Length: 177
Image (cartoon, rainbow, N blue to C red; front, side, top):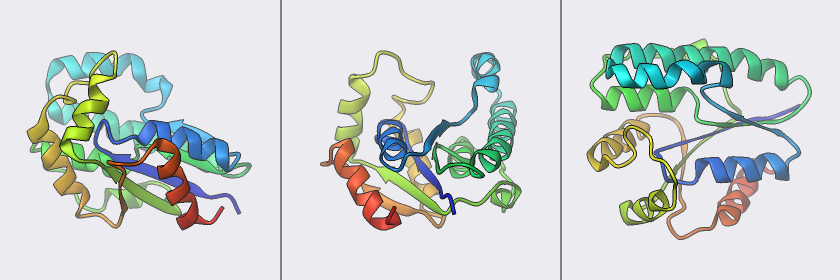
């Protein structure tokens, strides 16, 4: 049976690099939310600074992704870069009244990991990026998101002093694929 593996976490924690390497290691598919069909609208919604609209846009992206992932799982493993818990945590950190139990609306991952790193390491990683997201340099917002992640049944991995390859090895030991 194919596995659905999710990597959640704040920006700069190595989710994308790790997810790509895991997908390659297990001969699976890398999937990033929101899906490409949502990307053209994402920038316009971010510019509105309407966080309720932002929440429902990203939630719709995850709901759509869940349907695509379910189809992909018929033929392969799927490693997802951000899923429902990121959508919930990020928006609760913005003060949005997010309903409870939204995760029941999407396909349940076999494994949900939350990567995290020390603030100084995140700052170093973010400085290597060419572009930043809307909240990437907001340390207070990132701290609030981390607190929200702790409310969910995630497997937490501190990869502050790990390479992406070491993070992958640790996750592969847990999922045993």
